[in-house]
Length: 206
Length: 206
DNA sequence: TAGAAACTAGACTACTTAGTCTCACGAATC
DNA sequence: GATTCGTGAGACTAAGTAGTCTAGTTTCTA
Image (tube, rainbow over all chains, first blue to last red; front, side, top):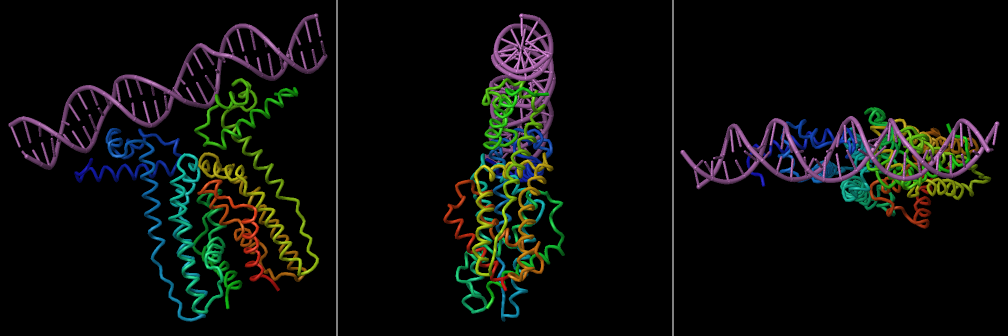
């Protein structure tokens, strides 16, 4: 429907405005008129691009989910000796926590959870591209460490889930209910991850 | 404003209808007309009792939160020997998980998270009466076990949080995003808790 | 039994919203 | 140079909603 270069700019402007609007309120509190006004675009252009409010919401949230999910991925763990293990795990988990624990992502998560009834597929996508993917990657890492004798992990999937929630559980769930102000500082996150990794290694170390 | 016994019945009927309505949709999708119709009560009665939609929502969610929070409380842990410890912890955590992981409470949690922007106090109350309280109680139990030499827990608060999220993290967060169908069966919950307690004891046992 | 308190039914106001339509304008294409 | 496509501005429709008001009815109490 749209090929002209100006169209892409309009599209981006709409998505940017929609992100601000939807993330600062619920699905229902946002109006298409406000998004149009905020993006400096006529209402009809908005409908030409996205069809409906649902369509705009779906495209926005899907794009945000995939964009973030892609960043979790590539992160190889280079462990040469048993002595490296605590620091290497700490680095890996810290990176994941830093990536997830941002106001923007926490608000996206709140939004998707609140709209579970209306848009269940959105929430499923977020779960798959987010926590499930992170845990799968972690499971591969743990299985590798087990194979190399650096850890004793009989059930890598289970252990990965445990490590993940040992790290993510408290901060993510606090953020859900207490808002962005509850997000810990970098120093607090660091010592939180350190404690979690220590507990994990005490249970699964060799 | 209301003393007559029939008034209490009306009030209960309204709260019951409001619970069904609010839990099966968001705050905005619910209409006062539907709540009135569902509870078999005139709209004016509804306003006489609760003042406004906000008032009704606040009273409903507060009541549900307190009611559930109260059930978490009284649950003494009777451990006589080190051999009892795994089973005793398993019983305690299983009970908490069973209490939390119900469709009704999961939906309440989704609702409150989704309305964090509009009703931040509600979410704070839910956090305090729910997870925070549970973790505080757990911390007391762990401190006691430490004092008796059955565990080695230098930071009871931190360890309690770790144990809590080791157990609650995955099922609660899956329920948030995947819906009630993802709630595991009693048997699955049992083995999940068993694995979590095993990991915890491997890290903190003496 | 009389009066007051609580209730019912439903009309009504004032407002907001998603989505459509009309018409005019500017730029790219033929 | 004419046409077409995307756009802008804004009126418009149709529907829904919170909250108020009126008028009549039931139910408890003194």
